[in-house]
Amino acid sequence: MDDRRAPLPPDATRWPNRFAGLGPAFHTPMRGTGLPDPHWVATSDDAAAVLGWPTDWWQRWPEALAVFSGNATWEGMAPLASVYSGHQFGVWAGQLGDGRALMLGEVDTPQGPMELQLKGAGRTPYSRMGDGRAVLRSSIREFLGSEAMHHLGIPTSRGLCLTGSALPVRRERVETAAVVTRVAPSFLRFGHFEHFYHHDRHEELRTLAEHAIAHHFPACREAEQPVLALLSEVTERTARLIAQWQAVGFCHGVMNTDNMSLLGLTIDYGPFGFLDVFDPQHICNHSDEGGLYAYARQPKVGWWNLHAFAQALVPLVGQGQGTPEDVAAIRAALARYETVFAQALAAQMRAKLGLREVREADQDLVNDWLRLLETQKADYTIAMRSLCDFSPRDAGPVRDVFMDREAFDTWAARYAERLTAEHSVDTERQAAMRRANPRVVLRNHLAETAIQRAEQGDFSEVQRLLAVLSRPFDDDSGTAADAGFPPDWAQQLSVSCSS
Image (cartoon, rainbow, N blue to C red; front, side, top):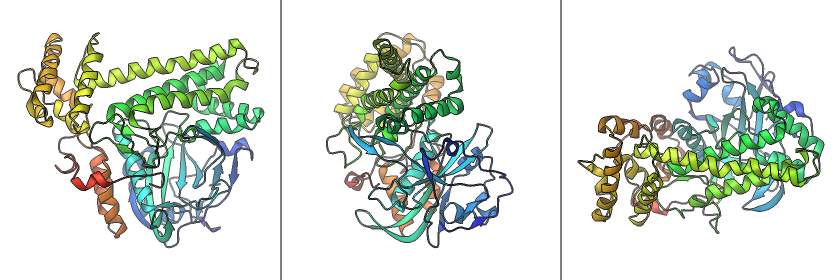
């Protein structure tokens, strides 16, 4: 990033940065290394609307391309990279930090301040052996993935825009560079707290907790022990988030503690993916050789990560000595995870099956449905969407999803009986189920097609797919292929931590 200051957009007057006020222990102010000869790849009108920006902001403000490629800043922006630590694949990794991310500042919006962050704008003091760059392939996946998750109703960072350049970057192969601009109320992570705890810097740890409570969890200030209230709130948000992941068949792929949002958002889209065939042991990240972050393990990983976060808060609870009373209070806050997760997932699955009432045998019905999907190797999204057409008098197209029709018929008889017992009305239930079961998700082969075209200089498929993913529940969103079974070649696709 050179020292140019771009003309200030007429709709923006300042760029506050509350995190910057914490002091030098928490971040390094710096300029990035921008992209040479950048070009626009894609923009999200919906994310821009969150900021209160016009849909043509990227055309209206001529210097926007330079700003969001890391080549310039608007007046008032003071970019910084934050420091944090964390556990990676269950192992303490020590100091990490924003190795390829720069926080530009905040935008005041009706929903509160939103942080803008560049990903891929060059090396920082926390890049370690990395080059600080992001490639077009991974940036397209993150841009589309974050917007897709938002429109599925799942808490997430947003993708404002994506720029690219011919600058070569080496990963498994030589690729071209890109910068994605991410938007979130905060990018605070569990790892920010772990960093100061494991370095015995308890004053900075307290400052960070007070910052988080004041700006992001103000209701916790009224509690007898605000830090315990913070832990409880983070625990519940994390539980609800992962329940939503499981319900939609989303695999994060790299649930390190430094990738866990304090606000309960989905962040750091790397080797993520959505299930095709329903396989609880599915591993979306081919770098995860042990399957630590397999789909079925995500709930327990979230629970483990919360314990790592809770450990970092021990010096701030009670007298900070880790007394038996303090430990018991921390465990009580963490104990909410299993209850909240189970309740949230049960509610999600009842909605997906169109069940209005809560009945004792519902969990068995859901579990047997998932077991049927697994043994029949059924496509998760297609099976759930097809179930929306089910009627106790006519199974509809969902029966054809299964190889063993008799196995489905056995389950369907129980399901029909359950619907009849609560006097379910087909048209009402089916409409509600279509709002709970997406027709289209960002499958790997859809992203790959957009990536391949983009690498040839055609970005139209990125923007088309963005529009499709913005209406994932609508019957007329996208083409039949967007909502269909993945092609045979998709079985060969794999993603890793460089994706």
